[in-house]
Length: 97
Image 1 (tube, rainbow, N blue to C red):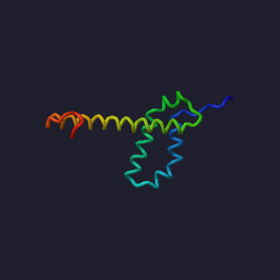
Image 2: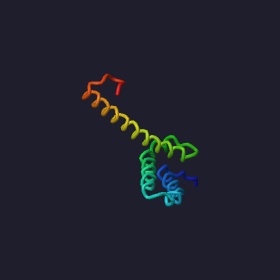
Image 3: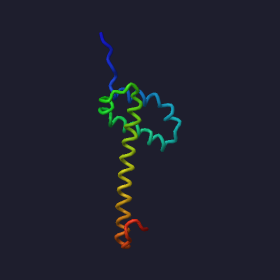
Image 4: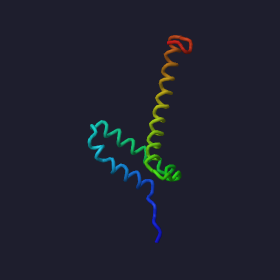
C-alpha cells in the first residue's frame, strides 16, 4: 500500500501543537494573537496545499503574513481616508499637514 500524505489542515494542526509550549509561555494577550496567526494559516490551507512545498511551515508563515498585510493595507486605507477628511475640513493642499 502507498504512503498517504498529510493534508495541509493536518500539517497546520501539527505545527500548532508543536508550538504549544511556546504559546503557553506567552502572556494571555499574546496567546490571543498567536491563535489568530494560526487561524490565518488555517484560512489559507487550500492554496498552501496546492503549492505543496517540501517545508509546509513556509506556507504556514506566508499565510500568516498575507493576513497581516491585509490588515496593514486596510489600516493604511483608513488612515488615508481620515487624512483626506481632515484636509477637506481644513482645506489643506495635498501633502501638507
